[in-house]
Amino acid sequence: MVTLQLQQLVVYPGQRIQLRNVDWHEFEAILDELGEKRSSRIAYSNGVLVIRMPLPNHEVDNELIGDMVKILLEELDIRNECFGSTTFKRQDMATGIEPDQCFYIENAAVMIGKRRVDLTIDPPPDLAIEVDVTSKTGLDAYQSLGVPELWRYEEGRLRISVLENGAYRESNTSPHFPNLAIAELIAEFVNRAQSEGRSQTLKAFRQRVRE
Image 1 (cartoon, rainbow, N blue to C red):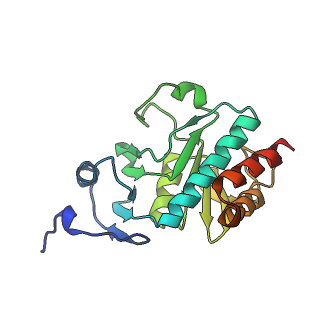
Image 2: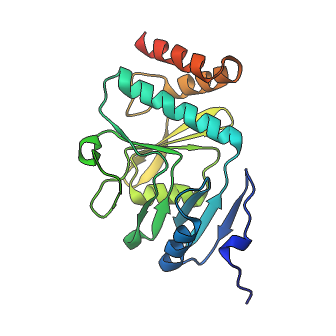
Image 3: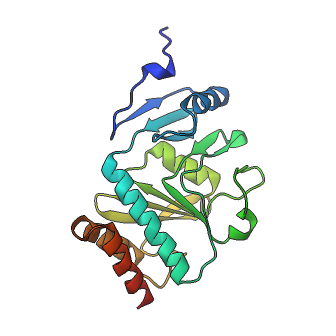
């Protein structure tokens, strides 16, 4: 059997590697070796670890969608705590995930002031966002951890998944923003940003929400 060091593996932007038969201790060791200051994202479930490296346009869309959600929460006066791409993991479930963006909304009050998350005592985020295709490993991880709502933005389309009876179902509306055609709204303004730029797009988005 050939053994490779993690630093020998190179993940190019837009690509990912998948490692099978990874136990929890190996997963923790890999997280330690990768460190916290990195651009790669991980998903771990059922002994499968996926490490992906986002493309630059992924980061642009990721930040833009995150900013739009923050505007929605501010303008609708919804209390929230943003935890970005925090690593969420539970050893008893052998599961770990790093969303592109995530928000505590219903559970915002209990997360105020926290800088570390322990899912054995803390709730999972109420809304998680992934830009580009989420692997089955990632979906399994979100589902196992009980994240109530997952957004996936890919190929110009926002897909909304809502957790019901322990499994995700596709939804046309967001439980957190039920009075808005959120999928169409997000897709419209991400597209506008390509020609109008980020700042002008966010100003226009805020005005639309106010209307």
